[in-house]
Each structure stands twice: as C-alpha cells, then as structure tokens.
Length: 372
Image 1 (cartoon, rainbow, N blue to C red):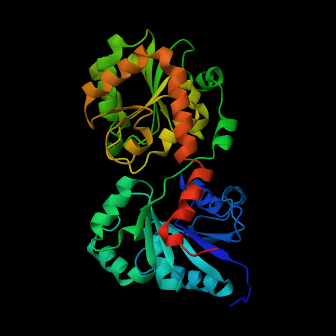
Image 2: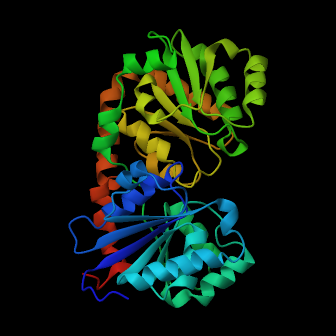
Image 3: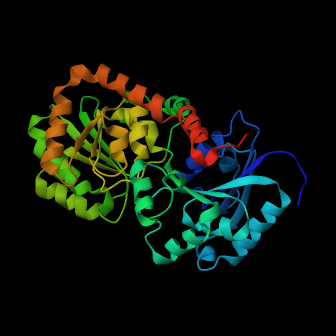
C-alpha cells in the first residue's frame, strides 16, 4: 500500500456507454477546488483516450471486462478493485449502479456511496440482504427524489440521511458550445425551415411510450401551426409498430422517424417544443439538454421528470394522449411567452442542475459531514 498523505476518491463505474461517461465527469467535478484527487475505474469497456479526457478525473483505469465477464460472483473484478485500493490511499468510494457497489463493498473496506440511476435496484431479496449486511459503510444517492423514495421504500429502517438525492446535472457551457443553430440543425435532420416541430428523443421502447406521443400529436394537429411535424430521434424494437400507428392515425406524413443520431443533443434547437412521454423516467437527462437549448418542455407527471419540469414546463398524466394534445396546443398558442419561459428554464438550470449548484448540495449532505 502507498503511504501518500494525498486525499483520493475512488469512483467506480460499470461502463462509459450512453450517459454514464458524463455521469463520471459530473461526480469528478464535485471535487474541483478540494484537496481530493479522483481515480475513476471503468469495469467494462476498452481503453479510450476520448473517454479518459471526458472523465474529468486525475487518473482513469480501464479494467476492460465485457458484461458477460462480470456476471455471478465477479471474483476477478473484486480482486482487481482490491489491488487498486491497496496501491492507493482512498478516503471513500463512489460507485454507480448496483454491480460496482457490490464489487466495491466486497473488494475494499472503504465507505461506499452508491449512486442509483434507476428504480427497483433494492427490490430483489438478495440485494436487500446485501445492502443491510453492509449497512454500516454504505450510503445511497438517488438521481431524483423519486428514485430516492423508491430506495427508502425498499430499505425500510434505514436512516433517511443515509439515502439522499443528488440530481444529475449539465455542463451548460459545454452543451451550449456544441449546439447547432436552428437552421443548421434542421438542415442536418432534414426538417423543413418553416415547420413547427415537436421533438422527442429516446429508445423506441415501451417505457418511452411514443405511442401516446403519436396519439397526442394526432389529436392536437388541427390546433397546431401549419406544417407542424413530430420528429422522433432514436431507434428500437417498436419502430415498425410506431410507424404503423402513425399510418393508422393518418399522420405518417407529419411524423419523421430520424433513427439513432450521434450526439443528438447538438440538434435540439431544431425543435420548437420537446415532449417526453416516458413511463416513470428516473430523471430525464434529455429534459435538461432541451432546456439548455432554450426549448420549452412537456413531460409526463410521474417519475423524476416532474422534478425537472414542474414550474418551468408543462405536465400531462401518464398515458393520457388527450392531456398531451391539450399541452401541445397550449404551447403553440403561447409563442409570445417564449422569452419568459426561457428565463424560467435558465434560472432552474442554474439553481439546481449545474455542476456548481450540485457541488454545493453534495458537500452539505450529512454523509459528507466532517470530510475536508
């Protein structure tokens, strides 16, 4: 073991696919301006210079496992994390998702802060028992109050201050620097310049409920501006069924299935409004990205999305196509209020969802009490 007096934090991530690279960056940013150095370890994924740069960490280690390699007991991964911890003097570990929490607790004697990005992580009996076995050195964070409350319900008897919320956040300057302007974004996506565009981004999957989105758009269409379009960015197993539904609803000509678009958030200014129809989204990072692009947001009134949208955007009941139609029509009718809407969204982002705002919240959490 090294005998350095340097303060270090171990950040342990399952991988860097999808949003999880930025999650690593977000948590590394919590230690900017502090005495701590951050070592980020990725359980799966090959070494990558781009990932190393994007992690925002002082040191990045790639264990290089494939997902199939870390099923079951994960003994090799436990041995690896034990070796890494033995070679450095870590004060504590931040682990994203259950598998890294499991490996970190079995492979080290560090206090572990488990960050959970989904519902249901402790509903399994085996996970319930595991968490309670390591209760003395495990604290938990949900990415929204909705996820936090789900964990608290799954682990009754835990002190409330051991299961807290720490919101996801955005690097506003970085997002806004890469945004294309409206005309460029529309040209790139093949959307008409004079259309009023409802945007949606997500997998074509039942939990994203784009069927309700299509039905709501079809109902609202007579009340929307001329040449209105619905643009859906994403791919998935429901693509054929959703295209058939658009045909059935008579709106196939007004719906654009854009497929998977690399770096999709760069194109958000192509949209006049962003609509998320998801079933109990744990958080809804795309909502922050839309707000950062000055695009008004509409969201279902369940899950973590409510915490992002309430007071700055519009909500409708889950699965309620008529409710969505009313909110689309309302947004289209209130174009003169766009400046006010954008001011509210900018204020919400700065108050709750930037690195600086969440850093202040993190260091005020009871679980961080007494740390330098």
